[in-house]
Amino acid sequence: MDSRMREKDKIDDILVANRASDEDDLKKGIRVNVTSPLALSAQFIRLAEAGKLEAMSPLVLMHQKVGRRLALIEAKLLVCNSPEHLAEFEKDCRRRRVDFATKLRQLAKTLEDKKARLRKRLRAIEEKVFHKEPALAGSLAGHSYPVPPGPISLVSKHVIQSDPYIEVRDKLIAAHHKCTAREICKRLDLEFARDLTN
Image (cartoon, rainbow, N blue to C red):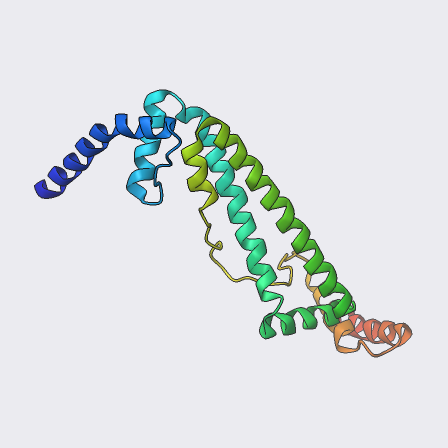
């Protein structure tokens, strides 16, 4: 435990000693390597000491939020070429009685449009950060965000709570989707008539 503390103290001493030379390098246009967590944390310490962290934190958090949304959209675009996801999407289109090809094209276009808008927002945030703190902007621009945990699907998973009669109706209609509307109505009448007599 003591050796870890001594090691951290040495690192802090090095950071403090190098701070003046780093600031001189920034003024000369020399970029600081902020790819390691230590260098980035040192940069945040400098911002806090300079009183700039309060103004920068909301921009960094917004960059993270937009970056994660972008990662999800890009993941959905990738699964647009996945056989199991396309099969699931086709099944859902058939269930909803919509044209698969048209819906897939619409979905891909919507995702591409969102991707372009999110990338534009990320660049705008990075530009704001660059005007306030150029070295930090470089680390944000190079950062890639992970895809949020959980399954990625092309099918909307919104579950609407409904009563059991609606579920029975929907299942009966789906099971007899090739029948005419009149035939389906007759089957529904018979199904629900049985429930009323029981």
